[in-house]
Image (tube, rainbow, N blue to C red):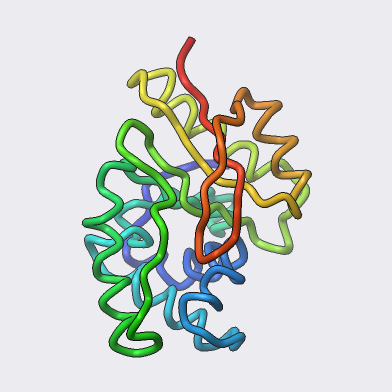
Amino acid sequence: MIIRKAAFEDSETIAKYLLLAMEEIIYKFIGEKDSKTAYYFVLHFVESEKNQYSYENCFVAEENDEIVGAVSVYEGGRLHELRQPIIDYVRLNFNPDFDPEDETQRGEFYIDSLGVSPDHQGKGIGSKLLQFLIEEYVTQYNETLGLLVEDENPNAKKLYLKLGFEVVGTKTLVGKTLEHLQLKRE
């Protein structure tokens, strides 16, 4: 398996996998539980540049010339700049009062979404993507990685803690309280 920077041509697959990770959040963004609308919403931003879901901020895991996982990561201090196109789009097309809470902040590289192909889940791909990010950001560049995890996802939290992340507090996103975890270089 190789992990590489994503390219525009990967957008359709990236959108599918990122949506797996944040489906409920996207439903809250668009105000409806329609998987097709949610997919095209995410695809629109993955294909576009200069936003938090853009392929520019993604890495993909590839095995036998097939993308089997994707992750979106960006500097937390750029959240407002990267989220503004999404806020503008949601306000124009779905909810004029859309005003999401800040899910990250300056001082961390934020793992926004990580998704693995349903056909390849349980094979350690998510763990390998996380280990790649830890090596890339924490080990090589002495940066802090951050992410949010839901109480309803104890297996993900267990994996994050095993990899060295620590709970540093809570954050609220679209009305949902999530645990905020970080991993810093020792």
